[in-house]
View 1 (cartoon, rainbow over the protein chains, first blue to last red):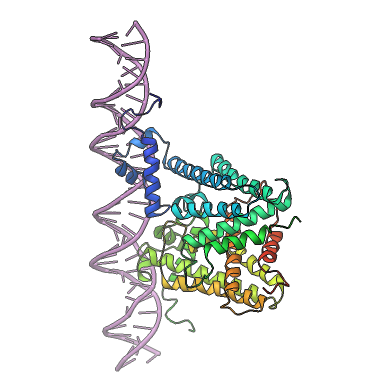
View 2: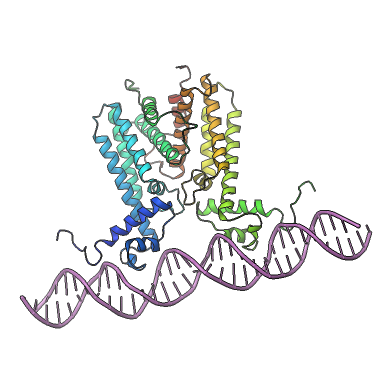
Length: 202
Length: 202
DNA sequence: TGTACATCAGTGAACGCGCGTTCACTGATGTAC
DNA sequence: TGTACATCAGTGAACGCGCGTTCACTGATGTAC
């Protein structure tokens, strides 16, 4: 009886639908889902979702938001796993980003609005800011500077771009073995060293 | 009479449809187009396209391919505008990439397969390789090394990722003014300097 | 130059499909007495 | 503890819609003689 207003008939249809849509997105692409198909996979009539969501867009919004939260948690965990000075901390943070992109490429694409359905929502923007804040904090701690320092901002952004760019190219297969010879680990270290030289304080 | 087998009835419907689809994609997103709508905007019946294309996918393929060619030309022109040693050459190359992403965000997204309809096609892969080849060449010339040198490959890839990542984040509005304080120009110079130090030959 | 014919780009009507959404309903659960 | 009632999650049938694709056709253009 801890969970209130759940387990009425279905259990928790709202969460189940979000999960069904997530799976459809991962198996058929960012736009390869429909309410109808999600209902089929949840074993429910096509009218049922409207008890929980206003419309299609509201479902998608929820799916993306849950993805952003998962990603944020992964990044936070990666940052927490190393002390402030350790250069491996940056690498681990980048890895957590890339790993998420690789394990949930559909949601990842939606988060960055590249699919057909672009959603503007304060909640999503806010969640995205939170993720950048993690990068800023880690970089500031690494450089021993304030989070407001322009140099911190510039380097954090450069790191973000480098990791984000690699994530897209890697999961897209653009960075396939015949052209790119650098390993992911070497790449991350190269990027980390290039933007955050261990001894430099300028 | 220079153009053969054209100007029968419509002029050149094939090219016109590709252009209509392109415009729809830019105004309504990567998946915000239909054959029907493209026909309407071309002033033609919905059956007409099938005289030129096998199906919907073949139209999209053509649209993406033409976008890749435009982008390749822009990159080539940027590289050609500066001599081999000039550090501004790298910056200009990056700018041409970003400019394309900004002026044709819909096609850009499709090129990197983030929309619902993912197309696998040898022609597209080949065209993509050609673009990376430009980056490899410019970096090799900049470093005074062979195009096969692993260090060249790694730095070219790092540059690509940095620029690609920025393109996505910038046109997506993620890199808005309240969080990111570094200017695009400063960013490009930072990236160029970080991966390709002017004097370093190691 | 003029005529008969072949070609083939574009027509317009029709098709079946899956979709998002609405509707009056049903029936299980929670609550008041 | 038992009963009556209110709530509301889920039903299932229906809707109108725009879509991709097919079809027999039409009629303008190019070509052979």
